[in-house]
Length: 357
Ligand SMILES: [Zn+2]
Image 1 (tube, rainbow, N blue to C red):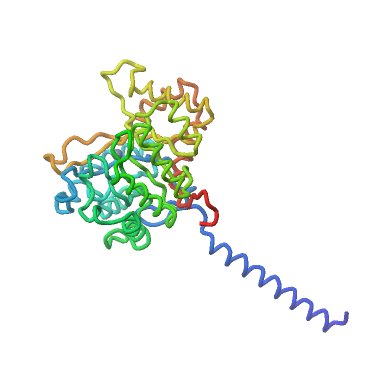
Image 2: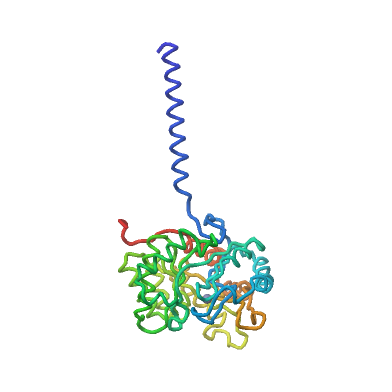
């Protein structure tokens, strides 16, 4: 090889290296990594920190035909909520998943302002709340099929909610606790399945008892949605056996309404000790990695003077965690419940049983 040939070889080598770097950069750009969707846009899942996965800032129970943003003053709601957000910040909470659905007081502008004032990640949702016999679904629901309904939810994920620029971070639906789902509620879970397959948003379904929980899981499976895309909300109302079965299928088991209830005997259903015991039973079955916990607490109610009584979000820290430690749970277990599980559940990812979809 003479000098000229050596120079050509060096240039070629540099060219190859340059191309390789280019390919690496382009590939990295294509895969932004795991993320959750907050009211301020995507945040890497690894940065969510301690998360309260089912709470409320505001709930308006008046019904779909009468609710609207004019029913509350955002400033007043924020003044009321701020001390409770300060309390959870003291407990290290970094992410607050606000589960109030549309037509029940969902307010993306309010959550965005709260996030700005507190520095906490807030996450809102899309979907319809069918429980309470469809009081909170809009009139258009009845004349629409599941595909049309899912298109509205998908549109919110792509374009944001009502011009706010805020995108939903999950699908929140609700069904009545009957043994069999009504045709309307079959339509809602079907729409949720279709929306999940397009968006990768996890489906949190206010459900309660086990029969409607498994009926929803079965509908999802028929539509090729993996049960890990489903959060069984209020799963504490199902038996321990049903919780185990759902978790073994891959569904998320959300034990909500954790609250210190001073009147209850320790160990009585819904006492802190009862929750701690149920969580410990799930751990014994190696299913702690499918358990979520929440207070399902809050909130400002516009129908009440000054928003009524606002319940805080600290009983998990003040009462449940000590009770879990008494049951032998470790710091790693607590980290799973409050950080890793919510992180995994709310990461935007399509979970399908059919890899071709
Ligand atoms: Zn709730």
